[in-house]
Image 1 (cartoon, each protein chain N blue to C red):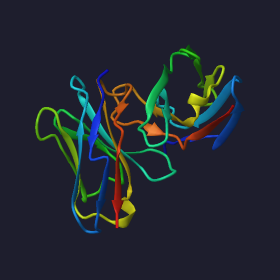
Image 2: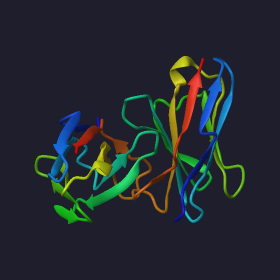
Image 3: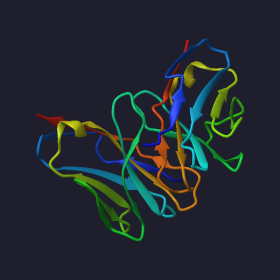
Length: 113
Length: 112
């Protein structure tokens, strides 16, 4: 069964450092998403990406965040200068079409120290 | 603003009993609703969905009910099993939309 894969599973970084979280969406999907989940809280939408551009983003997704699809398979989330409050699980997801079932990866646990 | 919320943060049921998890939504523009299951340390996993032109949809051991009049969504799990223990999220989006909004989550405990 096709799945969304994310690397690394756990990333520890110092405050102020840049991190890149990586995702390989399901191959025939056209819509890509990043979500985050602070421990014990709900899943929060960050950004969606379609046709090589950001289609929608939340208030959380400020100038410190960026996304990129550098090739035909990878989808990355970059946080330029991490803050303590960026510590969370980050989930990548993809879907075949907009407004349909999204498939989630296992997540990357980001810990900022 | 849009929001999707849950009535109960935790639910404890006996193995073999039926479970009902409830959810309220506020965005009238949403026309597609999804229930996700999240096990510890994993990403959300799709369980069942329903479109706004329906009021009931059944899957294997799960049923989703949609009441658009009161903007209420529920997930029913029949013959709950220990493997059903997880956090359940309702979520909403709209056709062609670019984001899915998640509710707060209900943790289901299944007692053996």
